Image (tube, rainbow, N blue to C red; front, side, top):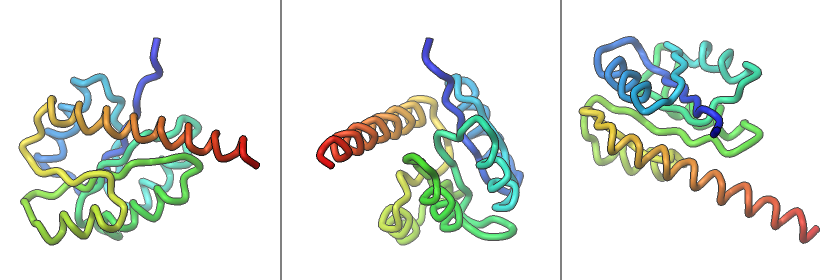
Amino acid sequence: MAEQITALVVHRRDEAFRDLAAVLGRLGIEVLHARNCEEAVRLFKQPKPVDMVFAGVELPDGSWTDMLILAAQSKSYLPVIVVSQMVDIELYLDALGSGAFDFITPPFLASDLAHIIRSAIYKELVSVKQNLSAQQLV
């Protein structure tokens, strides 16, 4: 049996993020919630690792860029998906250019989220394989 995927959803409480968490749950993803960066840091330190982060654009004590910094400090690849209430092409380009894995807006369709999750997991597997190959060269 495959290990369950855990997603951290970091946002100010609102309906769109409840919808996102509900769809993730229906996909079999364990969902952890944080309302701000401080709570996210605490959840990153739990024994069971977080596999991906869905980060709201603005947080009470930071923003999605803070989640990118936290993810970069992770011991393994940790994709960050930026979640915005509206389509903003400039923000989309900034997020992807800064290292976010993806950028999504409501409505959150199970098929779209499943594709993003599969792609993120595939990228993680490729990253692990490349790291192992590089270590073998040393």
